[in-house]
Length: 605
Image (cartoon, rainbow, N blue to C red; front, side):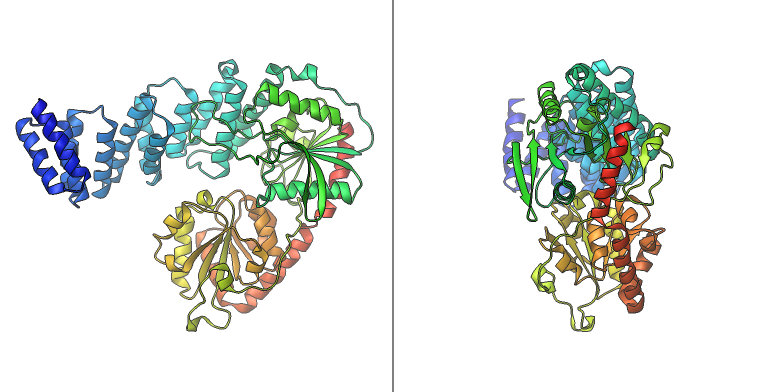
């Protein structure tokens, strides 16, 4: 035995050093002395895979797995070999077995994440089969980990239904921070469009709404907030306003800019006393086994009471940067708001837990920062776009709905700039005097939002328009790697964060929107500058842009984008419609005036 292990040790040293011929010879010596030795079979299979012989690798590593079915590494490498031979379903099942073994051994998120990522690249049926494999062998008792992992693998909303049901049936099994952490984990995945099976809309309207309300109620109950809070009586006026956000992140974060803009207009244009409450209420610290592990950002310099300045204005803000949603932090927020004694609380954005804690004690208005059903317990729930309806909403929320338009304030812009100033290559001689069509894709979450289907659409558009280019504006990490695999990768340019996006607009043909929930701000600014938008009829961009800029499906999407590039008259008409749309829906001052009127109504609602 000692000789076999010594030979194996020497062989692996050769293998690591790249001396695969010598390593292979020694692995075969081990197998001659100990037929069926799993490590030798496995490593010999790895050499086969590295050497471009995946079928041989499948045979050898398969034998190793049969000899030692308890090794996650063996199952994972068998998955790689099967993938290389085109057996994707079997590969996904091998990765699933490796993942289950690691999870059942209490493995941390790192390796589990890598295996989940390998499974998630396959088609929906294969992902579903892999999730079923994990579910059948899962041995841990962690409800949060199990159901969130299964959802991550196949996107079946039934797994989130099971998670929320477990909490709703017996909430005392879970701490408030744990309930809170799982909520924000699910919210993030749903916002990014990760649901692939089941009715995500029905889940959001029913179980997820119930879960949110339970979270607010359990927080108030367990942290003894009802006794602590001061109850305000109707005042018939709105002089002091607390604008409560979920988070303020500073420059580059559109919801932060919008919260500041509403606050400074209420203060400077309408004479109200305003304080922004920045509770950092979205989960920051892991509280259970929910996956994927995540942490919402905080801005460290936002700490305590201070005055923040932007665009020539100054607004008071109170921040709570503590990283846990625990009783001490929540009590400190409650005491500060009660000390300010606002006439009305504006819950800036849905799922605003802190604002909703006051819903039984003070007038609260929910001002959504996204389209669709906002989770809120406020007395009044405003629309995001003027055409919003309450179709499919719970009856009690429909009664509290009031029409509204979020409105926009345009960011400043500078002098004219050329393509080269943004790092976009100049077009070839056949592109025409304008340099050829330039399409923009803009966002802060494009790593998640610009998925395989959208990239395939981009590739098809560039096939059709050989002189066109795509510019991607916004911070990205993983997206450039996926772009590099496109047929037309040399005509897709990732620009990173763009300081003056409106100068980029002046070079653009059209704004292309991926299928996503967000993006409303960037689309509004494009419209204001006369840039036509191309989007399917879902999410914030469709709400902001309106029916003139929505299309039915991918085929119509391609036709619309191509027409904007090739038909100058059509593009001019769409540009005029874009400016008109912004003029009708973008008046932020009018939105603030309506908000104050609703503040008076909320006093007695």
